[in-house]
Length: 352
Image 1 (cartoon, helix red, strand yellow):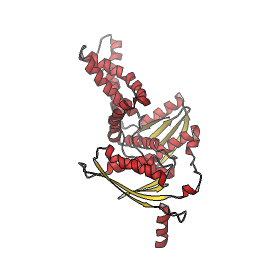
Image 2 (cartoon, helix red, strand yellow; image 1 turned 90 degrees about the vertical axis):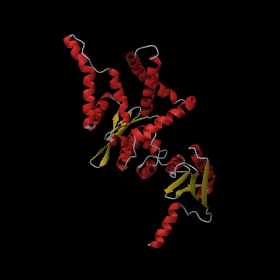
Image 3 (cartoon, helix red, strand yellow; image 1 turned 45 degrees about the vertical axis):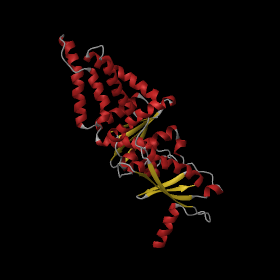
Image 4 (cartoon, one colour; image 1 turned 90 degrees about the horizontal axis):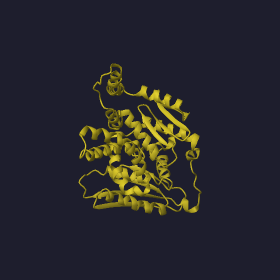
């Protein structure tokens, strides 16, 4: 499955169908189309109409500057100066670095829906919002790789050839190389090479190609995913009901606060965000809730303790030399109640 975002919606493309949703009249409107040329033309027309005017004008001018001199030259028989074709490649690849604001939010929503490991449904929207905004398979990887290969190729060829020949050759050669390189980097044996490259790509995704989506962007991306899933993998939309055993009923509540010590910044929001991403990967074992002073986790202690160790290690991975982790455990075994929601509900009942 592949994802695609544009100015007013999100697409998820499967093997046989396309899940398409756009924001229309203050609500998401979704539909399912078969993978076909007719469908792609219909979507392309809608995407073009939704583009901002400056983008249409800039694209049109650049296309004219690239192709019009050659066309007039064929008619007149004289060679006219024009813009090289590889400049159009730079523009098409470089659009990732100046996406319009709405497109960046839809792009972020697409990534968050991809990242969320639980059942993708509306009631889990708050958890989807907390998912990672980066995507290991995003086309941004290909774009970053393209410009890295173009620069490296130009620098290497410049040792023997002229600057214009080197630039042109490197620019064209980087297209198939970046696409092949993107696929190659996904292989498990390339993990050591992939890790530093993904750090660069994730930086571009977080700060340039994506931005924090609002509710409308998340709802649109969610509807597009569900439209496709209902056709190609409906089992992923079903809530898995775990078998109830005596051990499963012994749920504990853990209040955890992880604080890096001696770092240059007084802010710990990046560490807290990473903690939420890790917890989001374990929603099949536990439930959690972020508060302004820490994170509350609910689940079986046998599952929670290994995860707590993983959370404690996060600041060390980000460069901290010392970490202080405070844990409070409420483990009640005289009743089957006592969950996070039960405790809050009990207080609210007494207040009313």
